[in-house]
Amino acid sequence: MTILTYKTKLKFDSEQDKKAIIAILELERDIFNFCSIKCFNIEKNSIVLLHKLCYKEAKNQFPNSKSQIIIKAENNCLSAYKSTKSNKHKIKKPIVKKRLATHFDKRLYSYKDGILRLTTLNRRVACRLTLYSKLENALSKGKFCDPVIFSDGKNVFASLTFRFDNISSTSNSYVLGVDLGIRRLAATSQGNLYIDKEFNKRKRKLRYLKRMLNSKGTKSAKRHFRKLRNKEKHINHNFTHHLANKILSTNCGIIALEDLNCKSLKAKRSKYQNKNRISQIGFAQLKFILTYKAELLNKKVVCVNPAYTSQIDCVTGKKLGERRGCRFYSLRGLVYDADVNAAVNIASRTNLPVSYRNILDGQAIVNSPIVGKL
Image (cartoon, rainbow, N blue to C red; front, side):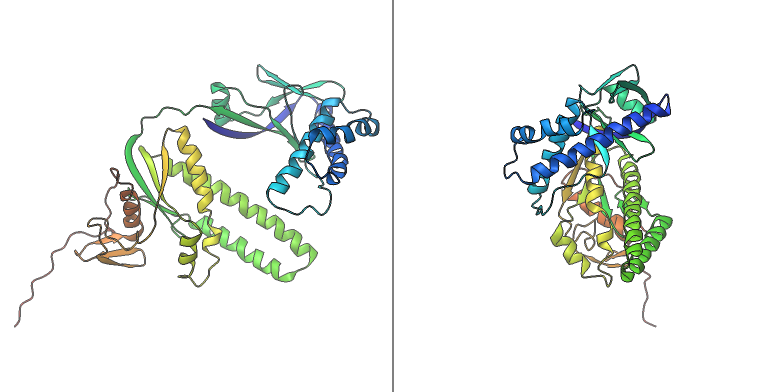
């Protein structure tokens, strides 16, 4: 079973219909904050107890609201408190909801023939989805679950979640090794190097601006810092998706990655003067995206021990050579690309057939000259 979520913008026939949806989202937010005050004083997380305390008062305070909106706000409020406590955060004051977003269940929406009908305070409003290739493909294969409707105050969006079985693929059983890095973001055992200098340049610029703003300490600097942090997060997330798509475009059925846990990263950081560089790379995010996208293609992602993968000769399987920068000098007289050599070693640790091509770094096999004494 694979779960995918797509975001799309909703198109309305009139501006009044859009305002009606935004109005019901604002009402749900207000009821949520009203219930949050009651829930803050309750020791036990019980929907029955919260409903007894909130429903009648909410009905009197918000007379235009429908019963399902109040019940939805109660459930959302209780879920927020449960998740906060499960994450071991201390709740010192009632949780306040600011965003306009909520789940619409079967009693609040209907979908038929490409038209989504949403409940408002007066009637149901019809709207259409903004379609694109991936969403059209998902709609053709199955139905989506209860959507999340949210708004930024100007436009209304829907988050649609699909659940369907894995898609069959013609992938073979060969393993593609992937070595992750900093300047070279990824290198595969097939000799493909993924380097984006513009992305690295843009990232360095954002990180420099963040350091300058963080040193200021003013309110405006902190506000600007938060915007840049979100901007960098979205840029990294978008780039990681594109990188995962390129890695999965091969015909290999298994993708082998390094198991970069906390201990291995801690040991790796000590080799660099700037210890903050590795923390800026989304290794875990790339692994997560590769894993769920591989399931769609009936592929598999495995992790192996990363120890000494850059110091082992991938041909002999022994530590017979030396790495200097981007090159690996073998004792056999050959020069390999260091990252491709590491990627082959990563794939070899799965004990399965490895998919690799030329690993030489632009070098040819040259016999050592015979020099005699004069």
